[in-house]
Length: 435
Ligand code: EPZ
Image 1 (cartoon, rainbow, N blue to C red):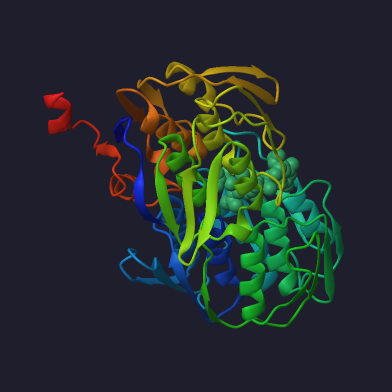
Image 2: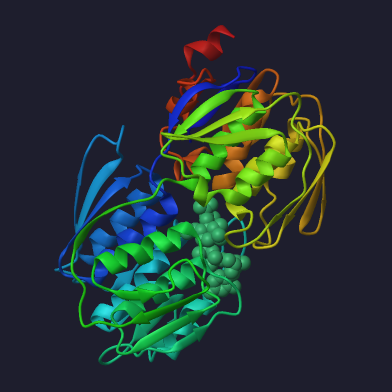
Protein backbone atom coordinates (compact mmCIF):
# COMPACT_ATOMS: atom_id res chain seq x y z
CA UNK A 1 0.00 0.00 0.00
CA UNK A 2 1.30 3.47 -0.91
CA UNK A 3 2.41 5.93 1.75
CA UNK A 4 2.81 9.70 1.67
CA UNK A 5 5.85 11.42 3.22
CA UNK A 6 5.65 15.07 4.26
CA UNK A 7 8.34 17.31 5.72
CA UNK A 8 6.49 20.11 7.53
CA UNK A 9 7.24 23.82 7.88
CA UNK A 10 6.83 25.38 4.44
CA UNK A 11 4.06 28.05 4.22
CA UNK A 12 1.85 27.23 1.21
CA UNK A 13 2.01 29.99 -1.40
CA UNK A 14 0.46 29.93 -4.84
CA UNK A 15 -2.59 28.64 -6.70
CA UNK A 16 -4.52 25.37 -6.38
CA UNK A 17 -7.16 24.30 -8.95
CA UNK A 18 -10.24 22.81 -7.26
CA UNK A 19 -11.63 19.67 -8.90
CA UNK A 20 -15.25 18.73 -9.53
CA UNK A 21 -17.20 17.63 -6.45
CA UNK A 22 -16.94 13.89 -5.72
CA UNK A 23 -20.25 13.88 -3.86
CA UNK A 24 -22.01 15.52 -6.80
CA UNK A 25 -20.31 13.39 -9.48
CA UNK A 26 -21.38 10.09 -7.89
CA UNK A 27 -25.18 10.67 -7.92
CA UNK A 28 -24.91 12.43 -11.28
CA UNK A 29 -23.26 9.32 -12.76
CA UNK A 30 -26.05 7.13 -11.32
CA UNK A 31 -28.65 9.47 -12.92
CA UNK A 32 -27.60 8.20 -16.37
CA UNK A 33 -29.68 5.07 -15.61
CA UNK A 34 -32.86 7.18 -15.83
CA UNK A 35 -32.68 7.63 -19.62
CA UNK A 36 -31.67 5.74 -22.78
CA UNK A 37 -29.96 8.88 -24.09
CA UNK A 38 -26.42 10.01 -23.36
CA UNK A 39 -25.57 12.10 -20.28
CA UNK A 40 -22.45 14.23 -20.87
CA UNK A 41 -20.79 15.21 -17.56
CA UNK A 42 -17.98 17.81 -17.47
CA UNK A 43 -15.51 18.65 -14.67
CA UNK A 44 -15.49 15.04 -13.46
CA UNK A 45 -12.74 14.50 -10.85
CA UNK A 46 -10.34 11.57 -11.33
CA UNK A 47 -10.78 9.67 -8.06
CA UNK A 48 -10.92 6.07 -6.88
CA UNK A 49 -14.62 6.43 -6.00
CA UNK A 50 -15.41 7.70 -9.50
CA UNK A 51 -13.61 4.69 -11.00
CA UNK A 52 -15.63 2.38 -8.71
CA UNK A 53 -18.91 3.99 -9.77
CA UNK A 54 -17.86 3.67 -13.42
CA UNK A 55 -17.13 -0.06 -12.89
CA UNK A 56 -20.51 -0.51 -11.21
CA UNK A 57 -22.39 1.21 -14.03
CA UNK A 58 -20.40 -0.67 -16.68
CA UNK A 59 -21.39 -4.02 -15.18
CA UNK A 60 -25.03 -2.90 -15.40
CA UNK A 61 -24.44 -2.43 -19.15
CA UNK A 62 -23.83 1.33 -19.25
CA UNK A 63 -21.50 2.52 -22.04
CA UNK A 64 -18.94 5.03 -20.71
CA UNK A 65 -16.47 7.23 -22.57
CA UNK A 66 -13.98 9.65 -21.03
CA UNK A 67 -12.06 12.50 -22.64
CA UNK A 68 -10.05 15.50 -21.50
CA UNK A 69 -6.75 15.62 -19.65
CA UNK A 70 -8.23 16.33 -16.23
CA UNK A 71 -5.76 19.16 -15.71
CA UNK A 72 -7.67 22.35 -16.22
CA UNK A 73 -11.35 21.55 -16.70
CA UNK A 74 -11.54 18.07 -15.27
CA UNK A 75 -12.58 15.20 -17.40
CA UNK A 76 -15.55 14.76 -19.69
CA UNK A 77 -17.50 11.57 -19.01
CA UNK A 78 -20.28 10.39 -21.32
CA UNK A 79 -22.65 7.73 -20.04
CA UNK A 80 -25.34 5.87 -21.99
CA UNK A 81 -27.73 3.40 -20.32
CA UNK A 82 -29.70 2.32 -23.40
CA UNK A 83 -28.50 -1.30 -23.00
CA UNK A 84 -28.87 -2.05 -19.28
CA UNK A 85 -28.83 -5.84 -19.03
CA UNK A 86 -27.93 -6.54 -15.41
CA UNK A 87 -29.91 -5.14 -12.45
CA UNK A 88 -27.61 -6.41 -9.68
CA UNK A 89 -25.12 -4.20 -7.84
CA UNK A 90 -22.69 -6.79 -6.39
CA UNK A 91 -21.33 -6.87 -2.84
CA UNK A 92 -17.68 -6.64 -3.93
CA UNK A 93 -18.33 -3.21 -5.47
CA UNK A 94 -20.95 -1.90 -3.03
CA UNK A 95 -18.80 -2.71 0.03
CA UNK A 96 -15.96 -0.59 -1.34
CA UNK A 97 -18.20 2.42 -1.93
CA UNK A 98 -21.50 3.05 -0.13
CA UNK A 99 -22.64 5.56 -2.75
CA UNK A 100 -23.29 2.49 -4.95
CA UNK A 101 -26.71 2.39 -3.28
CA UNK A 102 -27.59 5.40 -5.47
CA UNK A 103 -28.28 3.03 -8.40
CA UNK A 104 -31.25 1.59 -6.49
CA UNK A 105 -33.75 4.38 -7.15
CA UNK A 106 -32.91 4.88 -10.84
CA UNK A 107 -32.94 1.13 -11.68
CA UNK A 108 -36.29 0.71 -9.91
CA UNK A 109 -37.80 3.80 -11.53
CA UNK A 110 -36.79 2.95 -15.10
CA UNK A 111 -36.81 -0.89 -15.10
CA UNK A 112 -39.08 -1.83 -12.19
CA UNK A 113 -36.40 -3.96 -10.58
CA UNK A 114 -33.08 -3.75 -8.74
CA UNK A 115 -30.95 -6.11 -6.67
CA UNK A 116 -28.46 -4.10 -4.67
CA UNK A 117 -26.11 -5.42 -1.99
CA UNK A 118 -26.59 -3.89 1.44
CA UNK A 119 -23.53 -1.66 1.84
CA UNK A 120 -22.63 -2.85 5.32
CA UNK A 121 -21.03 -0.53 7.85
CA UNK A 122 -18.03 1.68 7.23
CA UNK A 123 -15.26 3.22 9.28
CA UNK A 124 -17.27 6.26 10.35
CA UNK A 125 -20.47 4.48 11.40
CA UNK A 126 -23.19 1.91 10.73
CA UNK A 127 -24.74 4.20 8.09
CA UNK A 128 -28.02 2.34 7.55
CA UNK A 129 -30.15 2.87 4.44
CA UNK A 130 -33.53 2.27 6.13
CA UNK A 131 -34.79 5.70 5.07
CA UNK A 132 -34.03 4.98 1.40
CA UNK A 133 -35.97 1.69 1.57
CA UNK A 134 -38.94 3.03 3.54
CA UNK A 135 -39.40 5.90 1.10
CA UNK A 136 -39.30 3.57 -1.93
CA UNK A 137 -41.88 1.32 -0.27
CA UNK A 138 -44.12 4.36 0.24
CA UNK A 139 -43.80 4.86 -3.53
CA UNK A 140 -45.13 1.34 -4.13
CA UNK A 141 -41.95 -0.74 -4.33
CA UNK A 142 -41.80 -4.24 -2.86
CA UNK A 143 -38.55 -4.56 -0.90
CA UNK A 144 -37.15 -7.91 0.34
CA UNK A 145 -33.82 -8.44 2.07
CA UNK A 146 -32.22 -11.74 1.08
CA UNK A 147 -28.64 -12.97 1.65
CA UNK A 148 -27.38 -9.43 2.24
CA UNK A 149 -29.09 -8.05 -0.87
CA UNK A 150 -32.00 -5.67 -1.32
CA UNK A 151 -34.48 -7.12 -3.80
CA UNK A 152 -36.69 -4.24 -5.01
CA UNK A 153 -39.50 -4.63 -7.50
CA UNK A 154 -42.55 -2.82 -8.84
CA UNK A 155 -44.91 -3.75 -11.66
CA UNK A 156 -45.54 -0.59 -13.66
CA UNK A 157 -44.32 2.80 -12.46
CA UNK A 158 -43.47 3.99 -8.97
CA UNK A 159 -46.23 6.16 -7.53
CA UNK A 160 -45.75 9.70 -6.24
CA UNK A 161 -46.00 10.02 -2.42
CA UNK A 162 -45.38 12.46 0.41
CA UNK A 163 -42.04 11.40 1.95
CA UNK A 164 -41.30 12.73 5.42
CA UNK A 165 -37.64 12.01 6.40
CA UNK A 166 -37.11 11.68 10.15
CA UNK A 167 -33.58 13.05 9.77
CA UNK A 168 -31.75 14.81 6.97
CA UNK A 169 -30.16 12.29 4.61
CA UNK A 170 -28.15 13.31 1.54
CA UNK A 171 -28.25 9.84 -0.05
CA UNK A 172 -31.90 9.16 0.68
CA UNK A 173 -32.90 12.57 -0.72
CA UNK A 174 -30.88 11.83 -3.87
CA UNK A 175 -32.33 8.34 -4.35
CA UNK A 176 -35.90 9.68 -4.05
CA UNK A 177 -35.19 12.73 -6.25
CA UNK A 178 -34.10 10.37 -9.03
CA UNK A 179 -36.84 7.75 -8.62
CA UNK A 180 -39.61 10.38 -8.24
CA UNK A 181 -38.54 12.00 -11.51
CA UNK A 182 -40.04 9.01 -13.40
CA UNK A 183 -42.84 8.15 -10.94
CA UNK A 184 -46.54 8.56 -11.74
CA UNK A 185 -47.87 11.72 -10.06
CA UNK A 186 -46.35 14.10 -7.54
CA UNK A 187 -43.77 13.29 -4.87
CA UNK A 188 -43.07 15.72 -2.03
CA UNK A 189 -39.90 15.22 0.03
CA UNK A 190 -40.12 16.85 3.47
CA UNK A 191 -36.99 17.42 5.58
CA UNK A 192 -34.96 17.06 2.37
CA UNK A 193 -31.18 17.52 2.36
CA UNK A 194 -30.09 20.93 1.04
CA UNK A 195 -26.40 20.19 0.32
CA UNK A 196 -25.03 21.81 -2.89
CA UNK A 197 -24.39 18.32 -4.27
CA UNK A 198 -28.09 17.45 -3.86
CA UNK A 199 -28.98 20.70 -5.67
CA UNK A 200 -26.47 19.87 -8.44
CA UNK A 201 -28.25 16.54 -8.99
CA UNK A 202 -31.66 18.24 -9.02
CA UNK A 203 -30.48 20.86 -11.55
CA UNK A 204 -29.15 18.11 -13.81
CA UNK A 205 -32.43 16.16 -13.54
CA UNK A 206 -34.30 19.32 -14.60
CA UNK A 207 -31.92 19.65 -17.55
CA UNK A 208 -32.87 16.04 -18.40
CA UNK A 209 -36.57 17.01 -18.44
CA UNK A 210 -37.61 16.42 -14.81
CA UNK A 211 -40.11 18.76 -13.16
CA UNK A 212 -38.73 19.76 -9.74
CA UNK A 213 -39.68 22.68 -7.45
CA UNK A 214 -38.08 23.75 -4.17
CA UNK A 215 -34.47 22.89 -5.06
CA UNK A 216 -32.24 24.01 -2.19
CA UNK A 217 -35.06 24.05 0.34
CA UNK A 218 -36.09 21.35 2.80
CA UNK A 219 -39.31 20.65 0.89
CA UNK A 220 -38.96 19.48 -2.73
CA UNK A 221 -41.88 18.71 -5.07
CA UNK A 222 -41.30 16.44 -8.09
CA UNK A 223 -43.92 15.95 -10.84
CA UNK A 224 -43.09 12.57 -12.40
CA UNK A 225 -42.69 12.40 -16.20
CA UNK A 226 -42.84 9.45 -18.62
CA UNK A 227 -39.20 9.68 -19.67
CA UNK A 228 -36.06 11.78 -19.38
CA UNK A 229 -33.54 12.73 -22.07
CA UNK A 230 -29.78 13.11 -22.14
CA UNK A 231 -27.99 16.46 -21.74
CA UNK A 232 -24.61 18.08 -21.07
CA UNK A 233 -23.97 19.06 -17.42
CA UNK A 234 -20.96 20.58 -15.61
CA UNK A 235 -20.30 19.43 -12.04
CA UNK A 236 -19.85 22.04 -9.29
CA UNK A 237 -16.46 22.57 -7.63
CA UNK A 238 -15.75 20.40 -4.59
CA UNK A 239 -16.49 22.47 -1.46
CA UNK A 240 -14.84 19.89 0.83
CA UNK A 241 -11.63 19.85 -1.20
CA UNK A 242 -11.78 23.68 -1.06
CA UNK A 243 -12.14 23.66 2.73
CA UNK A 244 -9.38 21.06 3.08
CA UNK A 245 -6.86 23.18 1.14
CA UNK A 246 -8.01 26.29 3.03
CA UNK A 247 -7.12 24.52 6.28
CA UNK A 248 -3.74 23.54 4.79
CA UNK A 249 -3.00 27.14 3.82
CA UNK A 250 -4.12 28.37 7.23
CA UNK A 251 -2.11 25.90 9.32
CA UNK A 252 1.10 26.68 7.42
CA UNK A 253 0.61 30.47 7.62
CA UNK A 254 0.42 30.57 3.85
CA UNK A 255 -1.42 32.57 1.18
CA UNK A 256 -3.21 30.48 -1.47
CA UNK A 257 -5.77 31.11 -4.21
CA UNK A 258 -8.24 28.25 -4.78
CA UNK A 259 -9.35 28.30 -8.42
CA UNK A 260 -13.02 27.57 -9.11
CA UNK A 261 -13.97 27.58 -5.42
CA UNK A 262 -17.41 29.07 -4.65
CA UNK A 263 -18.01 31.05 -1.45
CA UNK A 264 -21.77 30.45 -1.51
CA UNK A 265 -21.23 26.73 -0.85
CA UNK A 266 -18.99 27.35 2.16
CA UNK A 267 -20.61 30.14 4.18
CA UNK A 268 -20.49 28.27 7.52
CA UNK A 269 -16.90 27.18 6.91
CA UNK A 270 -15.81 30.71 5.91
CA UNK A 271 -17.46 32.13 9.04
CA UNK A 272 -15.68 29.57 11.25
CA UNK A 273 -12.32 30.32 9.62
CA UNK A 274 -12.88 34.06 10.16
CA UNK A 275 -13.60 33.43 13.86
CA UNK A 276 -10.31 31.50 14.00
CA UNK A 277 -8.42 34.42 12.44
CA UNK A 278 -8.20 33.08 8.89
CA UNK A 279 -9.28 35.40 6.09
CA UNK A 280 -11.08 33.79 3.13
CA UNK A 281 -11.94 36.36 0.45
CA UNK A 282 -13.49 36.09 -3.01
CA UNK A 283 -11.34 36.72 -6.09
CA UNK A 284 -12.42 36.78 -9.76
CA UNK A 285 -11.07 33.20 -10.06
CA UNK A 286 -12.22 31.71 -6.75
CA UNK A 287 -11.19 32.18 -3.13
CA UNK A 288 -8.02 33.52 -1.46
CA UNK A 289 -7.02 32.08 1.92
CA UNK A 290 -4.47 33.58 4.29
CA UNK A 291 -3.88 33.88 8.00
CA UNK A 292 -4.79 37.43 8.95
CA UNK A 293 -2.17 37.80 11.69
CA UNK A 294 -0.67 35.88 14.59
CA UNK A 295 -1.75 32.39 15.65
CA UNK A 296 -4.96 30.65 14.74
CA UNK A 297 -7.57 31.20 17.47
CA UNK A 298 -9.53 28.35 19.03
CA UNK A 299 -13.23 28.09 18.05
CA UNK A 300 -16.17 25.81 18.90
CA UNK A 301 -17.73 23.76 16.10
CA UNK A 302 -20.84 21.58 15.82
CA UNK A 303 -21.38 19.60 12.61
CA UNK A 304 -24.92 19.68 11.22
CA UNK A 305 -26.65 19.28 7.85
CA UNK A 306 -26.14 22.04 5.25
CA UNK A 307 -26.05 25.04 5.44
CA UNK A 308 -24.47 24.54 8.87
CA UNK A 309 -20.87 23.42 9.41
CA UNK A 310 -20.35 20.22 7.31
CA UNK A 311 -19.28 16.92 8.91
CA UNK A 312 -16.86 16.40 6.01
CA UNK A 313 -14.81 19.36 7.28
CA UNK A 314 -14.68 18.31 10.94
CA UNK A 315 -11.43 16.32 10.82
CA UNK A 316 -9.64 19.01 8.80
CA UNK A 317 -10.65 21.74 11.24
CA UNK A 318 -9.51 19.61 14.16
CA UNK A 319 -6.01 19.44 12.67
CA UNK A 320 -5.97 23.22 12.33
CA UNK A 321 -7.33 23.81 15.84
CA UNK A 322 -4.65 21.49 17.27
CA UNK A 323 -2.18 24.36 16.88
CA UNK A 324 -4.61 27.18 17.72
CA UNK A 325 -4.19 29.58 20.63
CA UNK A 326 -6.60 28.51 23.36
CA UNK A 327 -9.12 25.68 23.49
CA UNK A 328 -11.74 24.45 21.02
CA UNK A 329 -14.75 22.15 21.33
CA UNK A 330 -15.71 20.06 18.29
CA UNK A 331 -19.03 18.20 18.40
CA UNK A 332 -19.96 15.61 15.74
CA UNK A 333 -23.75 15.25 15.54
CA UNK A 334 -24.12 13.21 12.34
CA UNK A 335 -21.90 10.11 12.50
CA UNK A 336 -21.19 7.96 15.52
CA UNK A 337 -17.52 7.21 14.89
CA UNK A 338 -15.92 10.10 13.12
CA UNK A 339 -13.03 10.82 15.51
CA UNK A 340 -10.54 8.21 14.32
CA UNK A 341 -8.09 10.93 13.34
CA UNK A 342 -7.83 11.89 17.03
CA UNK A 343 -5.41 9.15 18.19
CA UNK A 344 -3.26 9.79 15.11
CA UNK A 345 -3.16 13.57 15.70
CA UNK A 346 -2.31 12.79 19.33
CA UNK A 347 0.73 10.82 18.12
CA UNK A 348 1.84 14.11 16.51
CA UNK A 349 1.58 15.94 19.82
CA UNK A 350 -1.99 17.24 19.66
CA UNK A 351 -3.81 17.55 23.01
CA UNK A 352 -7.33 16.25 22.38
CA UNK A 353 -9.72 14.62 24.85
CA UNK A 354 -12.90 12.88 23.71
CA UNK A 355 -16.17 13.08 25.63
CA UNK A 356 -18.74 11.06 23.65
CA UNK A 357 -19.66 13.06 20.54
CA UNK A 358 -17.43 15.98 21.56
CA UNK A 359 -13.68 16.55 21.42
CA UNK A 360 -11.94 19.13 23.62
CA UNK A 361 -8.78 20.43 21.94
CA UNK A 362 -6.11 22.41 23.76
CA UNK A 363 -3.90 24.11 21.17
CA UNK A 364 -0.15 23.46 21.22
CA UNK A 365 2.52 25.73 19.66
CA UNK A 366 3.65 23.07 17.19
CA UNK A 367 3.00 19.44 16.23
CA UNK A 368 5.79 16.94 15.62
CA UNK A 369 6.07 14.64 12.62
CA UNK A 370 5.34 10.91 13.16
CA UNK A 371 4.28 7.71 11.41
CA UNK A 372 0.47 7.81 11.30
CA UNK A 373 -2.35 5.71 9.84
CA UNK A 374 -5.15 6.93 7.60
CA UNK A 375 -8.51 5.39 8.58
CA UNK A 376 -11.12 7.11 6.42
CA UNK A 377 -11.21 9.73 3.69
CA UNK A 378 -11.44 12.94 5.70
CA UNK A 379 -9.34 11.65 8.62
CA UNK A 380 -6.50 10.98 6.17
CA UNK A 381 -6.50 14.51 4.77
CA UNK A 382 -6.53 15.92 8.30
CA UNK A 383 -3.28 14.05 8.96
CA UNK A 384 -1.76 15.57 5.81
CA UNK A 385 -2.86 19.03 6.95
CA UNK A 386 -1.26 18.49 10.37
CA UNK A 387 1.91 17.12 8.75
CA UNK A 388 2.33 20.24 6.58
CA UNK A 389 2.89 22.34 9.72
CA UNK A 390 4.52 19.71 11.94
CA UNK A 391 8.20 19.81 12.79
CA UNK A 392 10.08 17.13 10.86
CA UNK A 393 8.89 14.15 8.85
CA UNK A 394 5.46 12.51 8.80
CA UNK A 395 4.68 9.30 6.93
CA UNK A 396 0.99 8.60 6.37
CA UNK A 397 0.12 4.92 5.82
CA UNK A 398 -2.89 3.51 3.89
CA UNK A 399 -3.26 6.53 1.63
CA UNK A 400 -5.75 4.64 -0.54
CA UNK A 401 -8.28 6.37 1.72
CA UNK A 402 -7.01 9.74 0.44
CA UNK A 403 -7.17 8.65 -3.18
CA UNK A 404 -10.92 8.15 -2.85
CA UNK A 405 -11.57 11.86 -2.57
CA UNK A 406 -8.52 13.97 -3.46
CA UNK A 407 -7.26 14.28 -7.03
CA UNK A 408 -3.49 14.77 -7.48
CA UNK A 409 -3.06 15.87 -3.84
CA UNK A 410 0.74 15.72 -3.80
CA UNK A 411 0.99 17.64 -7.08
CA UNK A 412 -1.40 20.38 -5.96
CA UNK A 413 0.40 20.84 -2.62
CA UNK A 414 3.97 20.59 -3.93
CA UNK A 415 3.17 23.27 -6.52
CA UNK A 416 2.57 25.59 -3.53
CA UNK A 417 5.88 24.72 -1.88
CA UNK A 418 4.96 21.71 0.26
CA UNK A 419 7.62 19.02 0.73
CA UNK A 420 5.44 16.01 -0.07
CA UNK A 421 6.01 12.78 -1.97
CA UNK A 422 4.25 9.47 -2.49
CA UNK A 423 6.19 6.37 -1.44
CA UNK A 424 4.94 3.54 -3.65
CA UNK A 425 4.57 0.39 -1.56
CA UNK A 426 7.87 -1.44 -1.09
CA UNK A 427 10.01 1.14 -2.86
CA UNK A 428 12.13 3.50 -0.70
CA UNK A 429 12.73 6.89 -2.36
CA UNK A 430 16.14 8.50 -2.83
CA UNK A 431 15.10 11.28 -0.43
CA UNK A 432 14.33 8.90 2.41
CA UNK A 433 17.60 7.06 1.78
CA UNK A 434 19.51 10.36 1.85
CA UNK A 435 17.71 11.61 5.02
C1 EPZ B 1 -23.22 11.74 2.24
O1 EPZ B 1 -23.24 10.46 2.82
C2 EPZ B 1 -21.78 12.01 1.83
N1 EPZ B 1 -21.37 11.01 0.85
C3 EPZ B 1 -20.86 11.96 3.06
O2 EPZ B 1 -19.53 12.30 2.64
C4 EPZ B 1 -21.34 13.02 4.05
O3 EPZ B 1 -20.55 12.96 5.21
C5 EPZ B 1 -22.81 12.75 4.40
O4 EPZ B 1 -23.61 12.74 3.20
C6 EPZ B 1 -23.38 13.81 5.35
O5 EPZ B 1 -23.26 15.06 4.77
C7 EPZ B 1 -21.75 11.16 -0.45
O6 EPZ B 1 -22.45 12.09 -0.80
C8 EPZ B 1 -21.28 10.10 -1.40
P1 EPZ B 1 -26.55 10.75 5.01
P2 EPZ B 1 -24.68 9.74 3.10
O7 EPZ B 1 -27.51 9.78 4.41
O8 EPZ B 1 -25.66 10.11 2.06
C9 EPZ B 1 -28.22 8.48 8.84
C10 EPZ B 1 -17.23 11.98 2.35
O9 EPZ B 1 -16.31 12.05 3.17
N2 EPZ B 1 -29.03 7.69 7.92
O10 EPZ B 1 -26.80 12.22 4.83
O11 EPZ B 1 -24.42 8.30 3.34
C11 EPZ B 1 -26.73 8.21 8.70
O12 EPZ B 1 -26.36 7.07 9.46
C12 EPZ B 1 -18.53 11.28 2.71
O13 EPZ B 1 -17.21 12.49 1.20
C13 EPZ B 1 -29.97 6.80 8.43
O14 EPZ B 1 -30.10 6.63 9.63
O15 EPZ B 1 -25.08 10.43 4.49
C14 EPZ B 1 -26.12 9.49 9.24
O16 EPZ B 1 -26.12 9.42 10.66
C15 EPZ B 1 -18.43 10.62 4.09
N3 EPZ B 1 -30.75 6.07 7.56
C16 EPZ B 1 -27.12 10.56 8.81
O17 EPZ B 1 -28.34 9.87 8.51
C17 EPZ B 1 -30.64 6.23 6.20
O18 EPZ B 1 -31.39 5.55 5.45
C18 EPZ B 1 -26.70 11.35 7.57
O19 EPZ B 1 -26.37 10.39 6.57
C19 EPZ B 1 -29.69 7.14 5.69
C20 EPZ B 1 -28.91 7.87 6.57
